[in-house]
Image (cartoon, rainbow, N blue to C red; front, side):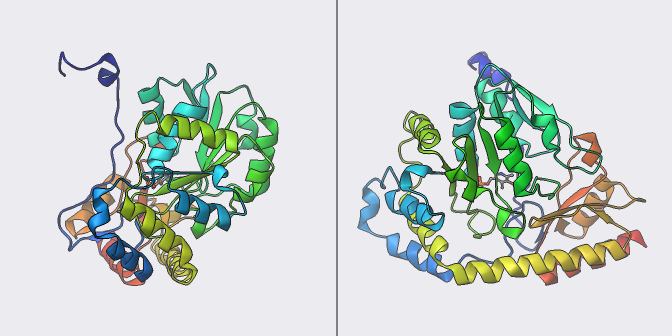
Length: 353
Ligand SMILES: *Cc1c(COP(=O)(O)O)cnc(C)c1O
C-alpha cells in the first residue's frame, strides 16, 4: 500500500502465473508449455536477426508476420492483429471490444486472467456457471451482454465446445463480440477461424506459446473482421507501437512456416495425453475429457492440494487451483513427454499406495 498509488492500483487483483522454478531438474508440468523445443528453423531465423539492425526499431505493423498468418487462414492482413503474447492481444480486446454498459460474460471456471483484465479496465462482468459436467451451455449466454469470452478448449478443464454450438452463440448474439480464445485448439477441438468470413462479431485469438513451443518468444494473434482489428490497432498504437521485437517477428514467421515440425510435435503431445489419461484412470483418477495439452484430474480418495504437495516433494510440479471451489479437488497436469508422464504416474502410484 502506498499513498502514491493511483486508485485503480488499490483495486487490482493481479493474475498469478504458474511457478517458473529456477531449478531445471524438476519435471515441470505446471504451465502448459510444450515439452518439445521449437522448430530448428525458428532458431536459425533468430540467429539471423542478431546483428547491427538491432539498433533500428522493428516493423511496427509486423507486416510480414500478419501476411503469413492471413495466408494460412485465407484472410487479408487487415483481418489479423498480432501482440506480445496472446495475453496482450486479449488485454487489448477487453479494452477495445468488451467494455460496454452491459456486463461481459465468461464461464465461472475459465482462464483466470479474464476477471483481472475486467478489473484493470473497469469492465462489468458476470461469471456463468459451467454445467455439472464442466461444460459451456450456449443457452446460458443468450441474454443481453456486453460481450462473451471463453477459451475453446476451455482452461483449466480442457473440455471443447463444438463449432456448431459456437455458431449458435454467434447467431444469438449479433450485437456483441464473441471472443474465442483458441490457445489450445491445435491439440483438439474445432477451430472457428473459418467462421471469421461469416460473422463480423467473431474474434478468434491464437498463441504460439503452446502448440508452436514458443512461450518464451511471446507472440499471439487475433483473427476477425477488419473493423474489430482496427479497434485493436487503435488501442495498441495508444499503448506501445512496437509490441513485437525483431526476434519475435522473425521467429514467429519461421514457426508458422514449418508445418512438418508442428504436425510431428503436436501429434506426439496428443498421443501422450491419451496414454497419460489411460494410466491415470488405472490409478483410479477421474479425468475430464481433454482436447488440450493438459488434463484436469482428481482422485476420489485424495485432495488435489495434498497430491500436488506430495508430487512437489518428488520434484514434479503440477498446478492446483484453490478456487473456484469446484476445481479445488483437481490437479491440472500439463502433458509432457511420455518419459515425464511415466515419472508422474510412478510417483502418483507410490503416493497412493
Ligand atoms: C496460455 C494461455 C494464454 C496466453 O498465452 P500467451 O500467448 O503465452 O500470452 C491465453 N489464453 C489461455 C486460455 C491460455 O491458457
